[in-house]
Image (cartoon, rainbow, N blue to C red):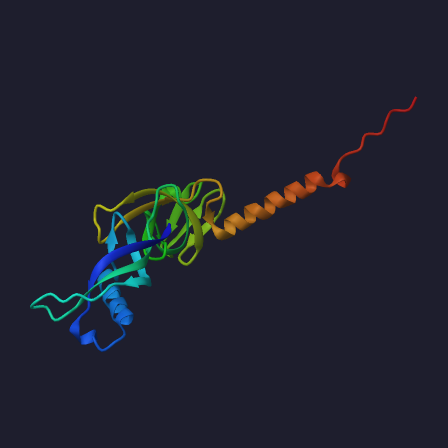
Length: 201
């Protein structure tokens, strides 16, 4: 899930940036500090947002860079269990599918890609034995997060499934939606109902 989080911190501005507007200089320092930052608490920092308040600059003896108490926003992505996410297939292997979720990557085990027996081909596609559905690199999909681990902060692990109703490749979902709408239309159309004539003596 994407979040806007407000933070307050003392930001040091490098002396080489002192000729610039204070907010511009602080923004540069914050972007340098938070670019690529990942933690269990906030997830992955995507960008530094609006700087809301800048306090008076403070100099520390022996340090040529002033410190400004700053209130600012960061935009983050923090995956959560049971969250429904949209992603694009980045790679396919014998054991599963790697799904790009924007700033992070999820992994769908081959058994969780579809409700069918699945086979893998050298062309990096997965095919359902009975449904004949094919999953390939570049396909857009809807999945549900079933596991999140920040044990390795530099490479968080996100487990995803597509075997539940309403999940899967976008084309499959469109097919199911169109099929269900046709069924409803047929059931509601009175001309399709059989009419029984009363018996005459």
